[in-house]
Length: 173
Image (cartoon, rainbow, N blue to C red):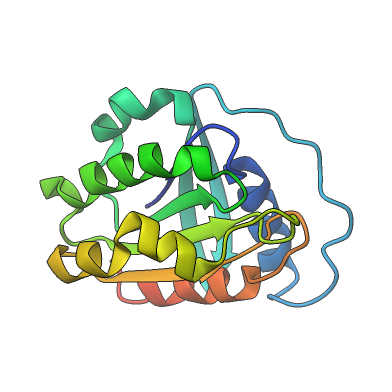
């Protein structure tokens, strides 16, 4: 199981829809226009077939207070941050620290996704890493943490996310 977490409006639902389409095209091809989405209230389960079936559980940002009740059986974690919204960064950092310190997620592989890099006002990955103090967080974390810059809307970086999911779930039972 892969958990997909992040604040409301960061693009989680669109990411899942895009990854599902990309996986059905074997990681190649044009994704076309972005499908319509609405904020997730609750949870969505989506199966992606990337050499094997990977189930992604997307939890709405408004559910952050109860995210911990979904940590069981989590092999990987996608944590999404809106690169175009600096006002959300401190709350995202607090959520990330909470996730990384949770015992049930100690063995999970973590991919931090900086989304919305297609917008003109996005922060660079260097700025976000600095503001989040990400090198310090990564040094102290038990988990293997990777970062990626993506645009769920345009599809930028999504083949790399799919490959990361395949690698993270390659040895799962």
